[in-house]
Image (tube, rainbow, N blue to C red; front, side, top):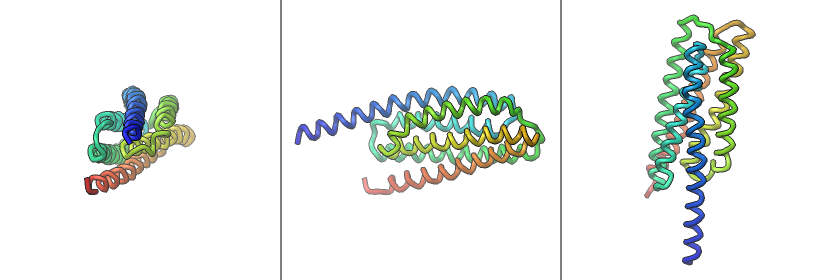
Length: 205
């Protein structure tokens, strides 16, 4: 029995170390990409790039929370997931507001910058996705973290589609539309994470 408990303890410690290593890597990637995409979005007047930059910032905060609760109880992890859901909800509403604003501000986005930075962001998030994929079923903490990474890939593809469509149509509307769709994805994921975390918090300790 003692050996069994020791083996379980060792396995749990090894899993936490693996989680910590992965989370530090994806945290660094997302923090760097937030600054790169944010600056590019402002220079290119791109709603979709700014939305994706905010997504990067949100993910950096998510990974930071995940590291904070890595060795804490399931209820701590559920509380962190609740905070993640709240951030995702806030960012989703913020991006919707930005998309609505751009409807009334006729600025054509810089499609070359959108394509270049969007491609770089896609590569960065693909690395994060692959690192997190094998841990997606370990616990609620890693599951919600992987969900953020999955959503990032969808958003990145959307930015590239917006860049191509804006170029072909010589229109700002694809950029606004993709920004709005990213916001809706944020909100859907936020409600999913909030629902799971509240369910865990309400369960008996």
